[in-house]
Length: 225
Image 1 (cartoon, helix red, strand yellow):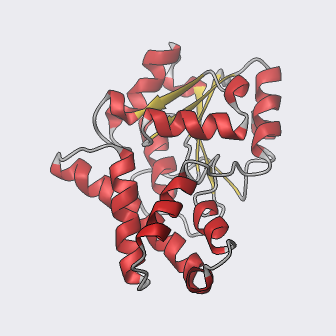
Image 2 (cartoon, rainbow, N blue to C red; image 1 turned 180 degrees about the horizontal axis):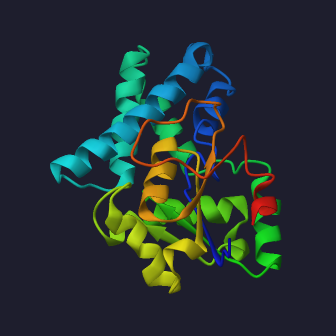
């Protein structure tokens, strides 16, 4: 395949969405959170995604920061954590998510080969800028495309359309990479070449399309191009 453009989902793909809860749980005085943080992180992420889908279906769009807060509120209540200071701390840490360790070198390799690289994310523009800057990825990405430009969340076709409009490439020139099975399926159904970064070793989603490649992380991604 001839790939000119590599497009990445952000949260869970380049940036570790569990790192906010994990880091907070390691701080002094957070014994209650330390006992439940893995479940809180899972619930937070699941509700964040569910709310984005439900808002898209209902035509009730809001930005990703709102669904991030709403998802956390549900997860904290489910965990029995009624703590305004902890909520504030977790949300602050979400703006400081850690990049997965293999990400910088992987992107650097792609850039040395002359490929265009970008993010295509549900995230709001200011959230994406903060994450990219903190992770030191600014010089390794040509752009960060946000669904806020079209007013609906993935996997709507309007979101995937943004890639061709920005880079002037055909669908079959794009390698789309996501850690979300449903998003990789969405990209595959749209006509992108796709990689599912299956970090949790989950089963393949039963949807209208399947990812072309499945990898446990992104360290070997350059090898398939």
